[in-house]
Every structure is written in structure tokens, then in C-alpha cells.
Image 1 (cartoon, helix red, strand yellow):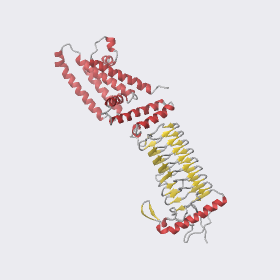
Image 2: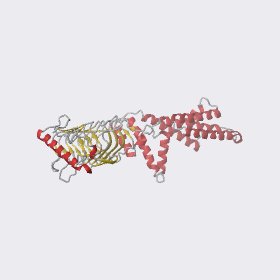
Image 3: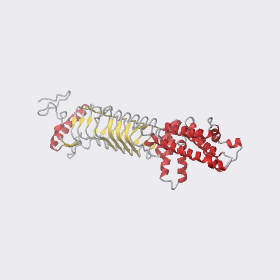
Image 4: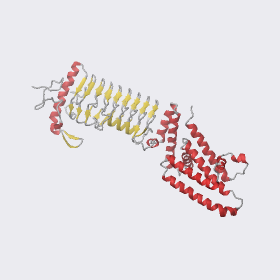
Length: 472
């Protein structure tokens, strides 16, 4: 009888085939009425024969104490357990691979279920192995290293079309799910007792629920459409550097004992800012705290501002109850982006100075009648011009630098037209919060409020400059 034409395989060929039952094509074994839905009912006998033959191969590995190498095997669906058998094993009571297990250039045409199996050494799934369904490791234990990577990272179509399920899975050794293009990873009550690597990979969903990482975890340079870390514990160092997020990051129920690195995290969509991928105030606080522990004050200040913005969003829902705190946060944000934007504070200082100087210009008269007949038309005209400038500025405000320049130039033009103060001398005196002391003028309530506003904006300007230059 002819043997399989695959190297190092001495199994008998199937009828009208040049390969054995392990290596032969199995596209005729199933029907696929819908994409991803395979029906194997008409080939149950062939499926059972396949698994019986595979167990013969496994027992030969055991007798020779060799590494379990599954080379170019095409796997059908997993076998039903009606005969107290468990896919790879003769007896459901003995579900152990004693030596390293390697899947080399294999194809799984349906779900690959490794549930409850104990891998006493490494489990290595190479980059050329293809999975048409899910990979299930529920209640499995992997004592050695788990290699599950290099699934066509640079290709539009991944070798792995399903999801990786790890429920109550224990990884005693290093876990490497990096350099890969994977659809979904679901970790539920899993334990990672050694280093875990998810770096330089692309995930559609990375969902961790009640999962415990005892050692270093590396997510760096990965792209995640959605990452969820509910009730997940990180004992040691966790690296999120250069991670791109498709949806918001929420660390509200995440527990950490070691350091975390969030340097250069960003959104997959370049049009979405950093504040939009941070879901809540607690997440911003955790990231801010991580940078403070690393003495990275500039990055910490960035997330302090986001923390304040998220607090402001919380107060939006409570403004009837906490209206004064809401108002303080609004003013703080508008005036200087919570002490982070020195140019914004300077913008408001100059513009308030222009408006104050214009008001001063219109009221510098000797007689009330002069003001009525001469200054009111100019005053009203200036107000109309200011409103027009603000209106046009609102249209172009998405171009932030152009917007600020346009507003300032417009106010400057109105001010110079009315005051002829080309050197801005009056403007400097109005902005100077101590001019009352130096000039000896009287101070009315309106001027007092104006000086307090200018002093507040100057304080915000100084703090904003210091926030981006100070060191502990």
C-alpha cells in the first residue's frame, strides 16, 4: 500500500489520494451554507478516523520521549466526546502533553479546542499555522512558554480568522502573543505568572476580565480597536508606550501595584485628540500618577489637564447642584486650559486689555453731552465690529492659531482707530494690575473687577509657563 508522500510520514494513503488522513485536503468533508459556518455531519466517520490516527501519532511521540511536532496536519472539527475521549487523547482523565508541543504549518478548519489540557512544557504555534475558527484554551495549564505570534502582521488577511479564548487559563511560563495580527483575545479569570508580551501587534478586541498578571506585561507599539481591562490586576511593570487606541481607555476598575508606562499613547484616528481616548477622570489620574512617579512632569501635567476636563464633564451633569464649582472649572478651562496653555492665557490678557482700553477711551470726556453726541456712535460701532470679528472667528476657530491671531488683530485695529495709541501705551497701563498704585487714581467697582480679572489671567499665564518648565 502506498504511503503518504509527505516527508517523514509513513502512514498509508487514502483511496484516490497521495496523502494520509492526517495530511490530505478536507474541503470535501464539510458543507459551508454560510461563510464561517461549517457542517460536518456527512463526514463523522472520517473525523473519528482522523482523531484515532492522530492519537497513534501522539502515542509514538510519548514512547520515544520526543517533542510533539504536528507538521502540516490539516485538522477537521474537534471530535465529539461521547466515547469518553478528548480530541488529542484516548482517555479524558489523562490530558497531559509531557514534552514541548509544536504546530508547524498546520491548518485548523474549525475551532481548535485545547480546553483542560495540561502542557507540561512549551506550546509553540508558528506563524504559518492557519486557523479558520477560534482557539480555545479554557481551563488549560501551560507550564512552559506559550508562543502564539507572527500571524501576518503586515498582511491584510490574517492566518488567524477567529478569536483566542482563555477562561481560567494558567500561564506558568512566558506568554508571547506579539508581532501578530489577531482579531479578538478574551481573557477571563486567567493567570499570567511570568512575562507577557502583546507588543507590536494589532487587535480588534483585547478584553481582560478578572485577569491577574504577576510579572511584566508589554503592550507597546500595538494597535487596539478596543481594549478593556475590567477588574484586571497588574503586579509589576506594565508598558503601554506608543500604543494606538481605536476606542476609549478605561482604567477605572484596574488595579496596579507596579509602574506603568503610557508614553506617546495616541488614537488610531489622527483627527481624535488625546482627551477623547481617555474615558474618565480616574483613568487620567492613574496615567498622571504614573508619570509623576517617573518624574516626567511635562507628561504628568498634560494628563492633569485631561483630569480637570473630565471633572468638568462630570460637573456638567451636576451643575444645578454644584453650579459654583462648575463655573470655576469652566473659567479655569477657558482661560488657560487648566493652567496648561500659556499662550491662551496671554491671548485673553491682551484681548481684555484692548476691550478695557477701548472703554477707557470712550469715557475720557469732560462733559456728558460730548459723550452722548460723539462717543456713543463710535462705541456702538466698535461693539458691532467686535461682535463681527468674534462671529467670523467662530467660523475659523478650528484653525486655532489663525483664530487667535484674527481676533487679536481685529481688536488691535479697532483700538488703534479709536485711540491713535500706536505704541500701545494706554494698553500697557490698563493691563498693569498695579497701575492704580503707581498713578494714584481712584478705583471704582468696575475697575476693581477688571483688575482682578487681569491679575487672575496673569497668574494663569505664569503658572502655565511654570507647569511646562518646572522640575521636582
